[in-house]
Length: 390
Image 1 (tube, helix red, strand yellow):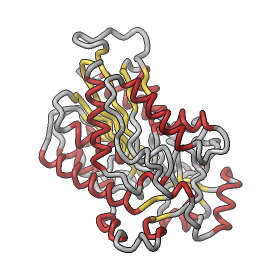
Image 2 (cartoon, one colour):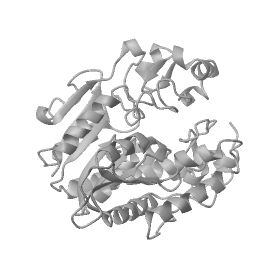
Image 3 (cartoon, helix red, strand yellow):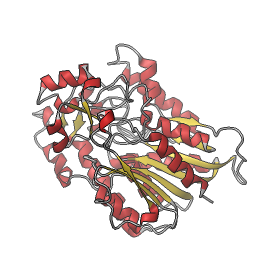
């Protein structure tokens, strides 16, 4: 597929442009930036696109007592994953709001506009963004918590293990280890000025309005650097704070064994690991059983073969990614099998769902699972964890 305008950097979203004293001002400025970039390529639905990709904030549900030193007792900062957007954190945000948290959700630089903005981004800009969000949240809540998915999980670890204001973490498939090949992803730079496509791992249609399908090599390199930093911090710091972690044993994006190792090193007695798996205790047999919740992720009656990296945060009823959602993740077929790509796109109800593993792909035409069929049960597990917080 040829490069298009979206595969160029916009010049507006490769660095953290926040720093506003009010989080609401940061949200407003970022919304303006997204609208400016997206208006160049979005033929319709600009308001919907901006709403889903923009950072946002929520105040706690009524009935919860105020904080002693700040306006609110608890606050949580949400950080999404690489190539994703704050849309992925919406259902979690609503849950935390119901549980009495002040909620702030970030947009990580390079994301939410066009894939080309990841060509020039550095992982340190993501770190700056989380640091800014933690500072704003700490101004409003006595106790702050960090919640992150994938890259956002790694960022939550990097910041949360060093910031004494952070009272706990909620981690969803945190990226602590990825393919070591990502270390060399930017080796293309000496010649890519002649061959621009060399800057990209994948060049896809980018049909999804809330997540990039195209993926530049620089994003892989920055992700590798971030995972190295998160792993280093997890070895240097072992704060006695409660950590709630969710992972999939079938994850094809991050290494689940690194997540399990991380949780086994963390000392707090209230720590909890929810592991979606198709093969029982194989992947966590040494994990303390009183801190482990195994969830069967193979649901044949729903044509679901396994969970997936992308399938933890959203409920089945999600209008965009859910069971009857408007988007089907079929990009894995785009350059290799256009017949299956067409079948996956046009008849999503007839294909299988799960992680894009070699074993699953041999089973038949499938789309990558984008929602959690057990989301209602996950809410219950998180609520039990929250009820045990000080």
